[in-house]
Image 1 (cartoon, rainbow, N blue to C red):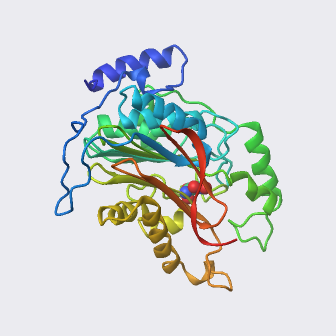
Image 2: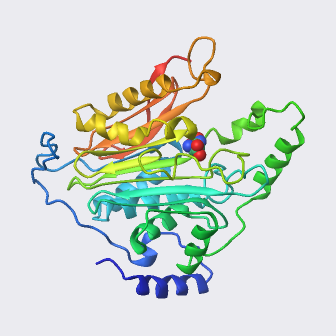
Length: 359
Ligand code: SD4
């Protein structure tokens, strides 16, 4: 039974008063399960039937979600709602100060302020929530879900998003760790009159190669969910919003078909709405990995000249992850060597991603 806004407020106020950061959706007793009956035949609008019998439960994420996919999978096979389960999975990275691409300890914008983006979709209820440029709250994925659950809106940004989060009982905290502050100072010290603004020295750039976290799941009933959460591009212009909080770009989920999400250069992904595109390719019958590769081809075709190398290939990388309603999954990156995390009946592991170009 979903909790009412009043119950949520009472419960989260008690959690905040006790000094806890909201960690797991279970803290709020949220349960949005509205699953498709196992074994049912699901028809898309004009599309072929996509599930007969039970699906294989499966959780797929970016490689930094190796711990998270296991947590999410264990919750799903115990009957948890798929969105609650994957948010519990990404909360691990959000609350880990060592992951400098997400939540607490995320690399800040050019003014040294950590601004977080997140979005989520819940397949069974066809709902979505998002926050962008959110400051001082470590778990934007949970705030995005609260926007979904307790407002008539899909996306809140900046000061409004923070005000909402505080009103819902989320605890304010400093997200800039000493380690990330030192990296920011090093970046700042190297700025000069000829600086390309958002280009960085290699040794600083390496700090955010672990990326954002995207996680997608399907249950045995074929119910789907997706979530993406990030501190975004390091040293970004204050107020810059990436792809992660954009429904259809950072993540997308259609309970009839599958779910998909992205990490990497958000500006390239926003222009192609790639998570939506991947789900549409799967609706047309493509396997998850093939759908991710096809979306990457679109990204290359949409890349502006200044971002293409002499060989006509993009100078950035972008990674896609997808799971279909039947539990098949896949991932792909522009350049070889990428991996993604998956957990199914064979356990949690990293798998090789497909790629368009050999490094
Ligand atoms: C963004 N897509 O804000 C995120 C950043 C990222 O690996 O994924 N970095 O553009």
